[in-house]
Image (cartoon, rainbow over the protein chains, first blue to last red):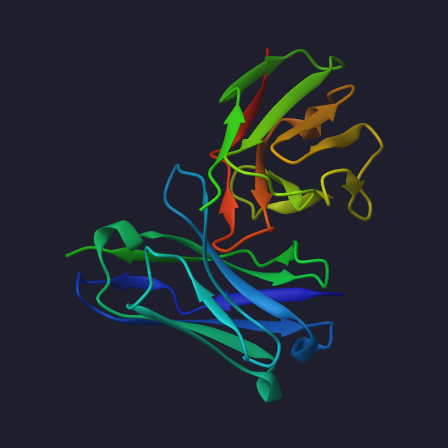
Length: 118
Length: 107
């Protein structure tokens, strides 16, 4: 059974940093691209970042580009989102999602809440 | 960036009735479109991919159609568990983009 479990969320002050993690089980992790998708309170879904299985290709949304770094450790079946210079508008539930070989997101974690506030 | 626009924002439907949700792309996304369902307090879950293929375990009352810029999700006979928010997402281009969602509520 595919499972994705996020961690690392919490309360952080504006300008601060946070590292989110997503632990994957139930599939050959290195064979799949992975995403971060966020959802601000009461709002819709926003794609944040994507990394291929071999980390060869990485993409970011403009809203986080230059402030965030996605990475993965296939030996640990985990991937990460390092977020710096956090702003109030980064407050959201952050979901990790697996990208199927067909490029759609087929499995999602339950999310971790990031709150940026003083 | 492909802007995805969903309509209506809210759809009020009686149980057992048919619901029709629309998603429009600002430029062609071919058939590279997925629909997700999200219930309160839960993560999104995949319903439809490649515009018209039901994901594993999704009931036949859910059907997707369209290509290019116009897409439709039809729920043929709404069940109580179908009242939720539905999002479309294109995966034809970067950045990946979602529609703003359609909330299907009980009338």
